[in-house]
Amino acid sequence: MFDVVTIGSATMDVFVECEDANIVSVSTKNKKSEFMSYPYGAKVEMTDFDSRVGGGGINTACNFANLGYKTSAIFKIGDDIYSAGILKSFKGSKVDLSNIICDKKISTGFSIILVSFQGDRTVLAHRGANAKIKKSDINFEAIKQAQLLYIAPLNGESTKVLDDLVTFAKENDVTVCFNAGTSSIKKGFNYMKKILENAHIVVLNKEEASMATGIQVRPDTSKEKFSEEPIHPDLKAMFKKLKVRDYQVIVITDGGNGAYAYDGHNYYICPVFDGPVVSTLGAGDAFASTFCGALAKNRIDIGKALMYASVNSSGVVSKFGATQGLMTFEEIENTLMQNPDYKYKIVE
Image (cartoon, rainbow, N blue to C red; front, side, top):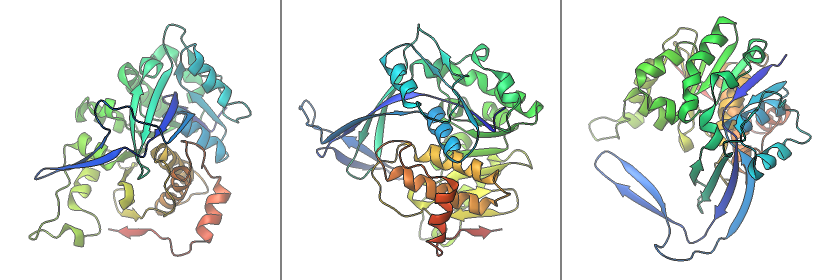
């Protein structure tokens, strides 16, 4: 019996850093976008290079295990050098791998991560086996006996198992934490609503929340001083649309602006926990899974769970790799004790 079962992707990640990469900003009337660029047709020298194991299924399983939860991971791999590297990375790990799926006919997921001088990244992803999880692949008995089912973003055909997963979990009194991905969001809100109805905790970043709800966050203008409000009214509208059940907690992360949560009564605002940024890869996985794990720990309240999540994700971004900077609960609590001025706010 496990405390947590995670399901999501597993990839071999190759990190490439290059000082010659440019950050190009493009603005329109209602939107500003940034792009990473390289000289076209040139041979560009790498500044640094590394390879690590990653993917939402792996990252969150490692985090839950590191936090002290008995954890089993469900992910799908092929039978190649990348799968061998993934399995080798778990040597000595406390994560149970009895529920992983191996298909020799499919290649293992692989990603190239282009890291900018600002610490942010662009990911070139080959989904491979991650996009081919079928209902028949999943050990539902392991989920039935767990306390929490954590669903990391699923891709491609794997999104077809979402409805079966959340319905089964709810029918068997298993708490569901759903970190929505773009593949499921692109299917439209009516599809998403069926998943949301059976999820207890839902975590998205602001861009995903906007895509899911169809609500854009309007920029500040001279007539409408949104910056003077604790939470932008468009964010509030997103929360109200995403929260389709009374028992749900909805979380929206907003990069350097921090994170917000809504329980139907109050809004919780948590700033980013400051620290060095080497790579942002894995920060979202660390944040979402820590939030879920913290809420389950000794009845920690929503605001404090946001603080725990922010501290742990700050540890991840300080290292080169999606799981290298993960902290234990004790380390998170010690960090918070050393930073007594770091607080969250509640807004009705």
